[in-house]
Image (cartoon, rainbow, N blue to C red; front, side):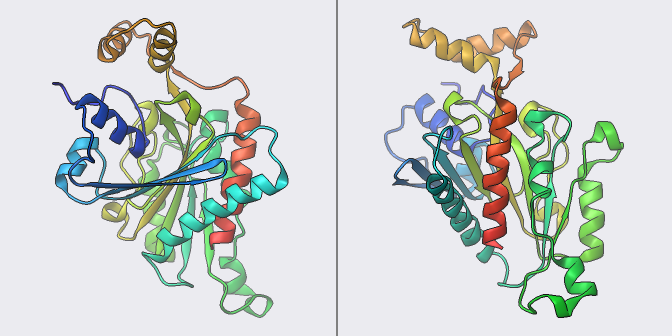
Length: 296
């Protein structure tokens, strides 16, 4: 059986599910550990890739991937939103604490294009991050000495700057010498239910533009010399996903690989996003930025 992953997805949990389904595995993939936790309307899935076989199976680097799935986002109460924020910040803090000390300096990087709504998550989150590095440097008496130093940058995209993201971020890292980078970006999913309703946290870095096939050099410990935590929300999906889900809902059984390959061959495999993307991005921006502020 062809075990390759046909769909474009940045979600490690989806790649795990695709591989298990394609190979009809009842047990876990060798080299992968997975645990699930349900909290009211929140589902947390923690996937850990432990060896080379696990890496090859789902085509993701060795490390930790946490997915927070929200059963609903519209018309939630303030208390429900705060529960989402708290769960996200707790999961993020665990990963941060695994890599650096309590007060080590952190650089936040907001990836993507702020002028394209589905790709604007990173830039919008950075606008709401509590920045402290300049206060600690130039007005230390105005801030608690134990406050973590936090700085942030929105490097833009290659098409508007002419500069690769890695070149900008590496230059900053080499100069200000943070101990860890948190990179925020929009992702691509294979599951319609995850669009703007899931958050993925990983400690293996992130590839700018990877979700839409416009891959640049990754931001990772290998390229920057310090740990990189990726935080992403799926905002787009393949048109092929919608076609296949629609046919399956009509009890029309199809070969997923054939549909994907035919759409690619005819240049029909567009990347699409919901019509209410503006409000969804605003909601998730608030959750992610507040969660990061709390975790720091």
